[in-house]
Length: 379
Ligand SMILES: O=C(O)CCC(=O)C(=O)O
Ligand SMILES: [Fe+2]
Image (cartoon, rainbow, N blue to C red; front, side, top):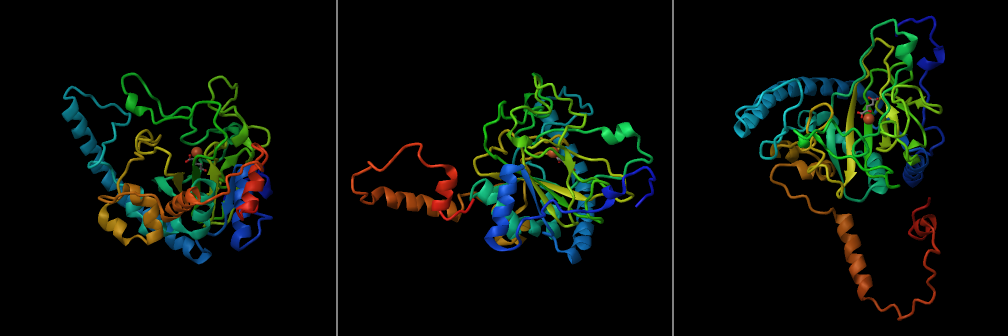
């Protein structure tokens, strides 16, 4: 790490924001869910084991280089398709309309097989399913979410600068829509947001160092997922570039996954070390969230509606296939087994004889926590 005499030494030390969460079994998952509900985020530690992190990071760097070549060819194809639609079109610096299938662009996951299998790690998937729905899928895979070393030395002003936002579908700027190019609007939930966790953004920290406030630990405001205001809310009077009381930075061992409710206010952070903080970002969402129709463009210019070639998909484990089935060439996404079993149980119950008496029922008399306890889900 570089030497900065004026820096607070403690910022270089990793601590875990997962402290206090039990390890193993249902209690661990409940711990993450509790943290997600109350704080709006959790960290699942060492999803990628310590002795695999270097190899996985290296494979992501190789995958990125492959994707770069693919993206250049895709850009030409995009422009050709757009020229077919409108021969007069002139291309500026902005993004060009993303093509729909069968011309949809390649998902980042297609060039990152070594990393990809961890996306189906049981703890991560259990948390996503419990927080969202038994049928979850990955709407977006971005392998290029590194925090690169900043030019040194950093001024006070640079260290104080934030870029507060919530993530799609709770990003109110929703990527620069205009009357001329309405397709640039990829959807933003209207304020005040319903009190529902609609998607989880996950940041996969791939080292080489443990993530600390010193080297790009994500900024976060705990509990902000419940606040009706938003840093990008046009009438909320919040400066999206200034520090917010209560903010703090994620700290976690390399190979850990930061999972956040997309409503939480967060910001990328300055990296004061000499190493790139390699990271991948993936968005997990329930089947009912429409990523394909409206989430058609990301801020970086990559589409959500990407495609996974059939030969790549066939090499995925069955668990990973479930997360990418909706993007796989020639594969139909149908509700997953657990959703189907629940529907069957509901049908069987409908036909059961309940005795014709509902006099015990006090409507409004059961809390969500009580319902969860009755269904074997400890809060
Ligand atoms: O890189 C980070 O720490 C934050 C990334 C982020 O906010 C995003 O990808 O939406
Ligand atoms: Fe974000």
